[in-house]
Length: 80
Image 1 (tube, rainbow, N blue to C red):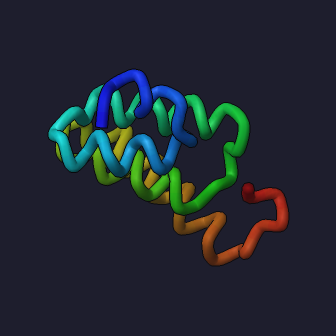
Image 2: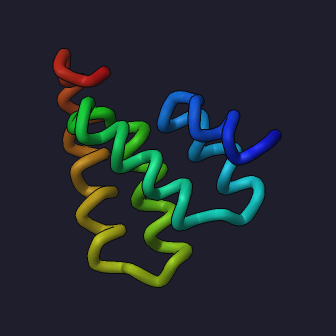
């Protein structure tokens, strides 16, 4: 899959493909774009937290993972 077609995909789907390619920073970018539109998406928050952990950004990772757990357990209707 080319970088151009990846850029046209939805944030979480593009991020999954980019992680498989080892392109963590770009995957994180796609997730952050998605989270601007859907800030309470627990799955995107979890995925971003996992990527941040892989990048050694542990404090940021913990914040994302805590928010993911919060929204997942609350079953927020605001999630995308």
